[in-house]
Every structure is written in structure tokens, then in C-alpha cells.
Length: 280
Ligand code: SAM
Image (cartoon, rainbow, N blue to C red; front, side, top):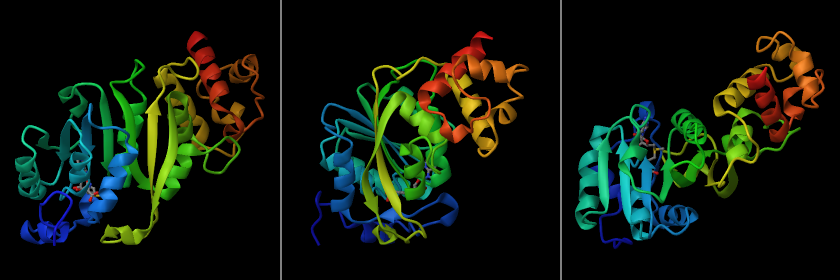
């Protein structure tokens, strides 16, 4: 069967290289190359960009990124079993694909790339949210990357794009919407993956804003939102009391009712609170 790039179909790649999916590595592979090319297109024009892909596995999305014209792809994969399959892709795209056999949480792959940088990944849930938090909270802004295009559980995608007052609204929505413009660009049913996971998935595309919507220190904002949403049903004067002895006064100074709950407070007011806490 012919494929978009002349390489073997992914089922054959998996059989040849013994890449039976491991649950412990969060492996649910995308085997439809038309679908992976479509995901790659959601990242925008790749032709003048370096792309960081985390967790390429057998390389379906990697091949999509290269077919869509990525200037250069750096693929970071923890599972050593995938290296031989990825080397075959690198061989037909000379100088355009570099593969690192590493844990993406243990290294800083962005240091290996030249801006403009786009990040594209289909990662296990816990790794994805941890990396997202890191990419959204560097001290300085704008970051080295210009966009993120990431697959999440649908429920996590809803948390990222949620508005104040909704059940899904929390720390992830605030960190994401503070410094970027996240939007859900695709939804995928379980059958799109091999093996199929129990949940539905969604691709979220984040464009980095040139500057944060409101001034705040990333570490303080993270601390406040983590504390406030840990007990989301409690009034803020109670949930945040460990942060400052006069927390009610501090809340009132930025127009937040001390009796309000975390889920009612928008990004602007969380940023104002974070500035007030830093100043106090
Ligand atoms: N991108 C491939 C696709 O779409 O078919 C694979 C997706 S699979 C959901 C997640 C991939 O991330 C697996 O190949 C897994 O081995 C890899 N992975 C898991 N944890 C990782 C980590 N900490 N660093 C790098 N890769 C990781």
C-alpha cells in the first residue's frame, strides 16, 4: 500500500520494529497518516519553523510534520524501542529530523532549536499537562516557542479553554489564557488510536500572546491558583489564608469579595491579587 511519503504503513512499522504499545508509557498510537498530517496542519505554516515533537512513538505525527514541510523536527522519545523506526524516517528526510532518546521531563529540548519554534505533541495525559505548565510559566514572556499544538483528553481540553463560573474552570484555564490564546481545533474519538483509550481526545492549539494579558509573576500566580483551586468550593478568605495573615484585606484591595469562590474569579483579578501579594 502506498503512503503519503513512500515509507511503509504504520501497522507494518510497528510489526517490523516490535513496537507493541506499552500502557506504562501511555502509548496509544495514531496510525492514519492522513489524520496525522491534518493534526500537523493545525500547527500553522511549518515551512520556516523548527518543530519540537515530544513522544513520536512509531512516527505517525512526525511523518505528518515532515510531509507538511517542517524546516526541521526534533523528536524526543523516551522509549528506546522506537529509535530504529524513527531512524528510517530521518534517512528519507536528510538533515530535517533529529531524534533524541530521552525523557522530555528531564531535559530542555527547546535549547536545541532555533526560533521560530512550534511545539506539536500527542503525549500521555500526565506528561502533557506537566510540560504544558512548564511551557506556559517561564519567567520571561514571550517564550521561545510561538505555538503549541497538543493532544489532550477532551476533558483536559475543556479545562484549558473554560470560562469563569464553569465547573471546568481552574488553574489550567488561568495559566493558559493569561499568556496565550488556546482553542480546541480537533476532536478525536477513541477509535482514532491503537489501542483505543477509554476517553475521547481533543487537539488544543495555543498561540503565544506577544505579552501576557495582565501583569503578574508566573510563580506567584501559579501558587495562588494552585492553592485557591485545591479547595474550589471554599471561600477565598479561607482557602488562601495560608498565603497572607491579612488575606481578606488583600482580596478587598483588588476588588475581590473575601467570600467569593475561586471559580468566580477571572484571570484579570487573579493577576491583580498576585501583584498585591508580591507587593505586600
Ligand atoms: N506521537 C505518537 C502518535 O501520535 O502515534 C505516539 C503517541 S503516544 C500517546 C505517547 C508517546 O509519548 C509514546 O511514544 C511514549 O513512549 C512517549 N512518551 C511517554 N512519556 C514520555 C516522556 N516523558 N518523554 C518523551 N516521550 C514520552
